[in-house]
Length: 229
Image (cartoon, rainbow, N blue to C red; front, side, top):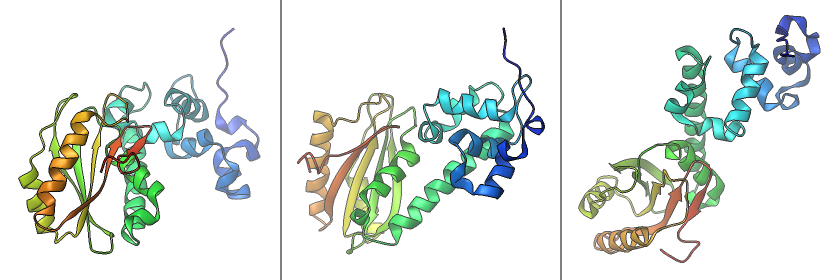
């Protein structure tokens, strides 16, 4: 027997996400209920709570949903341009909030925030991206720049360009980062060699390489913690 979709107006008032939030606060809501508030409406044969729960299940939680990216959302039946735009706007707000947090203090005072920021920034991208976080003398973030993009398997990184951007920002140190679209966060031998090449080039202008992060949608691995920087 197929299940019957119950309209939200048919639910008790304290079971509707908006009323529940106003009465008991946002922490009382499940992930699906919070998502339902963003989506506002369901699709044919599926109310908004059911659609929200389907999304949470499909992406294995809110974290997976936020890291999914525009293309993955486009493939979900029932998520039209308006709903996709709302979800992407939430992701961007989260990214900017994290950026503000890590700009207010030395970068490694909150390493978890750095990891989340990098994952939100490009953990979901289907192609490889190499980025640099430029830091001041107190290791506070000046800027993050995506400098190179490649194919699914490789990217070309030019040390001269990294040095020029470091000089442009008057950076005292940098943190390197790139994603692995394959989903494996373990650094490769090529990653190790690139790190050493960039360390040598940047040392000529007195800029330190503090770390190199390998990023996926579900993980962010520090090469410094592995003794590779």
